[in-house]
Length: 428
Image (tube, rainbow, N blue to C red; front, top):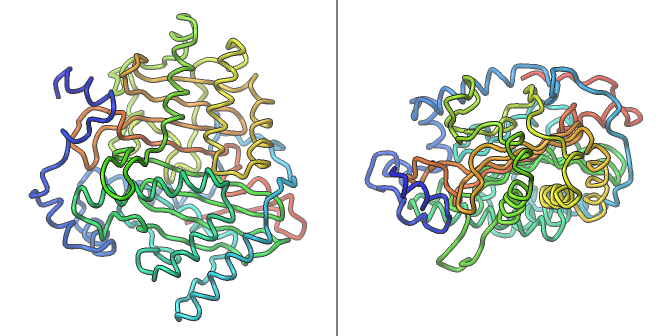
């Protein structure tokens, strides 16, 4: 790719010039397969080799007992507590029980995993169906799909639900672009249940597939939606019935405003690498799948040292932008839970770091991370996976949220719940 092409890719809205050649074997095979056949060929044939190697590495990571993401390898205790966050738990239980009843009427079993099952950790965001759990929406009737979506609607905020729907519709649009709708479609997502739906006992569910993964732990009026992953390639639909759908715009815009508004000295301190694939990066800092992300699928125990600058040392206006970014990342949470989480995050601004990779002109692709003892969010512009741009572009975006120090999957809360075992060790 020339410098001009890279600039064009970065500016967004130009993905059409990077549409792939659908006559190559990758796509001709994909167009004939369903999700299970596609995954089986990948697992057995090892294509592409780099992604197959990553899959094998993920399996090794899963065998490690769960610890949680940390900044130094040591889990800080006492960071999380039980609280009433106003979750409509009865509505969520009713929606889930209704789904189970409707599935049973069709002789479809959705057997729950134990609340402590290591299967929580087997979500992944590529289009490959690496772990087939629960039920897959594109294999259900429309009425049963609606029943699954009713569970999401009851759990998420209205705007968070619309964001999830947007990601799903964009995935369907991608499937149309590459003429492989049986692998990538609006409903190529799995729903798995953990524990028994209850208003007074812990339980939860996982909803995951290409570019949308939500892990939801529920206990009474409290919720943990973490880890989650949301992405899009391209991040807009410009034709068809869902034309105009676009996601992850605010996360991009606010992050750039934050970086551009810092003083030159703070910009230099925040910019840990000048290039998105920088020769100064240590081995492993960049890979084909996660690219600059550190906290993606199967990275439940990763040590992520703090980098960049402290939020508490930013001007008040820039601190407010950090808060607005976190509000976008907490968007899946209903309003009361979201505001509680934002206030909790603000209490840690004296230990919250912001870092940046890449340039920060208006048209430049980039990566940023906000990291504290109680939350980590990442934003990354990627090169093409289905599209052919070899440099990161603003029309391919990955975002994620993690709760460090054993907060993911509600793990830090579980020992606080009366009658629940005091130690949880997950082994694959």
